[in-house]
Length: 264
Ligand code: PGA
Image (cartoon, rainbow, N blue to C red):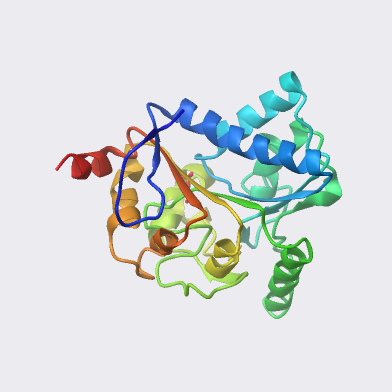
């Protein structure tokens, strides 16, 4: 069981784990339990999924649960948060490739149940495409669970600082810090796309349950601001403080500033 620390601002105290492995396994268990529950009820489950370094171990654990413990994804529908624009789905830097490689190729999800923003629309068509993505989520009754990472600038999905809390799926410009953090993936800064399609903050807030996972010391500063700072579009994740369906899942390193503050 995670250790709970009490905080007065957000509705739920963060769930803290000694390391990234344990935080990731716990996160995967939450997802697996929801899938099982929906299976028992004879229902589908709609998951909002994230990319980046943070969810990789969560996906490894879900794959392990599928291979070793019989977890089936036959009733699972997935919507990914975002994708670079433009980028081809076969490009190994695309999030479509990431998801296939890190999860979908290793589980029994039905291919037609996988939704990832496709970025082959022209700039003229992209708004229509984004609305269709939004409509598709609504068609499934919204997201049952949204998995989130957090950017060092507080972004959730690619909702960069300044994004409206009322935003829905749209074409966005990437923040300089986001592009800098993507150099590891693309090689050099000039290869990092300037834009992406991202589901909106409003879309995320509509999810019935939200798990925000933050791992490592490099997320400690932003986690402190997102959890305890003022609610502002300057830190997009700060809006989650107002929402009772959010659970923050942190390893010890990501929580280091929060714990210090709590000891005072
Ligand atoms: P990361 O990215 O998991 O690669 O740190 C998280 C994010 O930008 O949302």
